[in-house]
Length: 234
Image (cartoon, rainbow, N blue to C red; front, side, top):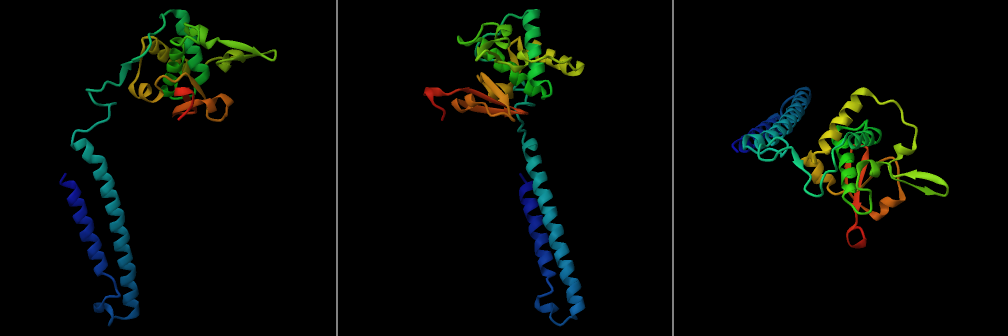
């Protein structure tokens, strides 16, 4: 904690010294205008330099103190593992078919997103399998569709569209996320932020149903929602 008073004293001393260079003080009133002008520029240079130095010093102190005191986020602390088990629901049966259905949904819905974005989509799908209003299997959830005015509408839009050939690197990561998710294991920050969300959509669309749901998180290009409590959103 000695860094805080040290930084404060250094900044106070520096600014005080720069202020004494002010050419408008009584000691400078007998000097030539040219000399006074030079001293004014020098004084402003002192002030700007010390202000920048103080700002950098306080930023460094703010970043350094938590690590010096032993504080750390759950992502690096040994007592808070990064990966935890989903505390609600049970994972669906881990079969090759379920694995492939989940990997396809992750790839076509979030293939261009970060690993966290992929895990968030996978969590939504698994959350749906534990709800009575959705199919009990992953393939059933991601292939769910209905007919509206003679047109087929899919819960996951990629299932109604022509699929393109997967990018090998993105497909490999999507498959990794699918395999991990089927063990019911997710990153702690995904469990905390997304939680029991059952819905998501891209940020560039405004679906009507979103007004009846509670927004819980935004990860990458997707916004995640859960059902509102007590029939209304707070």
